[in-house]
Image: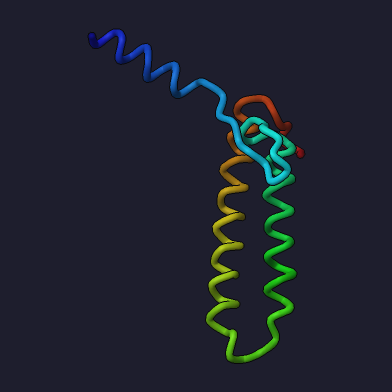
Length: 92
């Protein structure tokens, strides 16, 4: 039983993960289209945040800024995974 569990763990750790894009397309985690999708989300949220000029929307702007920071962190992790798996080059 220990060997079967170890085999399953190894398989789960090396199998490619897939991501659904907003367009409905399924791509591998860390691939160039996945990174581009994250960039698009970040830019859309940033432009939306910049349009909020009112001072009474300060908390909402902060919440959107935190979401942008989280997406940037996700993008960094995905990019590292893409480089490790060979989907991306270091200079991409």
